[in-house]
Image (cartoon, rainbow, N blue to C red; front, side, top):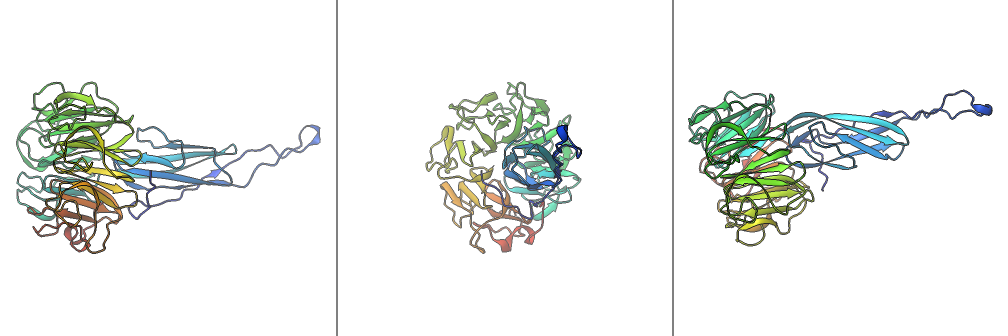
Length: 482
């Protein structure tokens, strides 16, 4: 696993805690032999780690101990996940919010601790032709197609620059979809959604489109949301999952094909840390690194070796050590702990990344890809953030959404370039949408490229571009979450 650079986005910090080593008292011992003096030279723990992190991305935490070599490390993340015991320690934060991470180190019988508040967010979300970004003040701005109210500004007018979503505050995470609705998770663990609602995917008990966010009825304790085309799922802080909306393909996972307009739990599914949804399927990553999927399976996107749709969660065979997922229209991808990626499902645009256009009903390794720390899947393309802050993408590229200055589909990963700087680095997060891709840099700037017919690039025009350009980043370089 590649250790991240410590950017302005992920501020480094050094926490020092004295380690007291106890010896005998100063008086004489038996036979008049003096007891050893107490050790008075302080030992310290210096902890270097990012304080603001992107959810579902791999980070590395490390520490040094002065005055000796530590024999034991105990990292307590306090987010419900298992503790770490190595140094360096790999960590993926799944649950948005604020958590106090602490380290206890032991050396020569002495112990010391250090701690730091870590803020976790999903700061960027791309939809079919709309994008949303979290701002530092806990509000959300969206831009692009707005025919169903998915910009959330109370209108159905397309927006070519970021526009504030009305009525939202204290937001800690945004979630987009390859459909036409979006959701925002608030600090109180309630979920608000807006946009298209023809199948009840907003979860307010109706099928009325909403151009202003509405709270999902009867749902609390939400850890993260995964909107699909016409359905939505959410994982709760207890690791269970609830879904609502369309269910014709079994995408609600409740053992039926009956749609419902309010949240209902999936029986027997527990220990979930991340959810993703495609057009009509969803997948859950469990704490043990395994994956289960349900819903439509005509292209093998459930990864069970068949093309049979499933209305209950079905394990993806032969897949382990997964740390993050991505779901496109009819394909799914998984990032593994070793920095490699496997994909399965539809492959007409090369979105599996194996150098072919043949569909795969079981996980297939993306050729030549390593060092990935974050993954995002769009309609028919995928992108990963690399450990050095660069980007690689593959799949559909008819609108230039891969960012390689062409419009040629790629069945193998290519490096995203910047037409001005001749490189594209320092990426904190990436979000693949319909036919566009957006990235958040470590300085808080968002850039988008690809199709722009509805203003989804956010630069005030409707002119597309097939590579990132710093001079035409979103709204002239607006600063979002960092």
